[in-house]
Length: 408
Image (cartoon, rainbow, N blue to C red; front, side, top):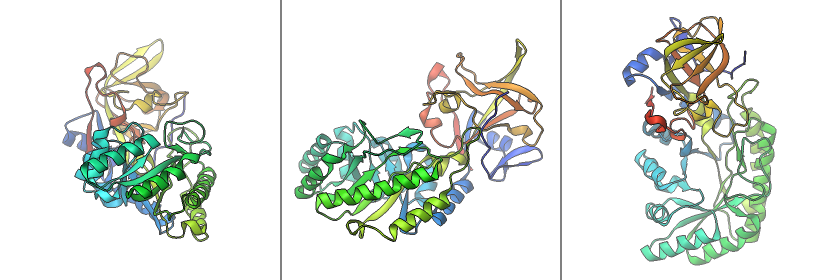
């Protein structure tokens, strides 16, 4: 038997069945047209943002990283909750604008931006987080050609990294951002060109559950920003401090202590270096804002025995939730939070392996887990799937197609 991750708070049972935003999952699935289905709970999105704002210093803006989940109705909700959007493509720029986010509250990062994407961002009035001196000069040439003033920031590849990060974005050679030594000369060049100088973007890593490591990274970020600002010799209008806040996925994971992070950051803000006295600060978060508000539902289509093991075969699979199968950056596969949604308050009584419908042994959604007995027609719920699910999985694999999505 193998353990699975903790089910996030905010979920309960009515008549033995999982409810999301006060509605039974079977009713939600019927409304959506069936399973497989991602369900996103609006009330959990709102609560997460409210709790985060209460914990963080008042002067800190909170941005949503669209890549975590770009589902249109969810984006519309987040546009009303977040102070800005962070994007990584022209496609996300279109989605962000369609969701109602003002262009001057959108920042565009990511290596390999094509000329058409740069021009779209300049035309819309979004901030471009420049990843290299070459990209900067391409932007300036495009802006001159179309007669526009670009809004430009520099993404920094810091020498430090976020300790314990699930995905390191700084420290050492990286395709993201510019090494510290390149920043000040390029910033001065940008300012001299007449472009609108928007500041720095410093992102050290993601998916950390270690509050002490995040506090340390934020302190390092502020110190580096002050040093670079002094070298640039001009005020720093804006500092995007990155994110890195993680959520529990696996056994023994514990929720991040955001209160301690907020207290430490508040103390830093109360004693800022002179170079940052007039700077506006923001953090960008994706999975932390939406991950635990999402549940993936698939229906049992077969129950079978093989060499003494029981398999529940569902109509879903890794083509919708690649990370759940362990094939999205994991070194060792571990079980996400999982439940039989239609028997949510029943006692666990059997060890089963939950698999998807794909013809590959990689398609495992729950490996040797203890669950209530489930039959054909029951619904399996996998929690913490509101981020990097539908949009980060190979839905075209074997011609299966995408899952349905709904915001409730």
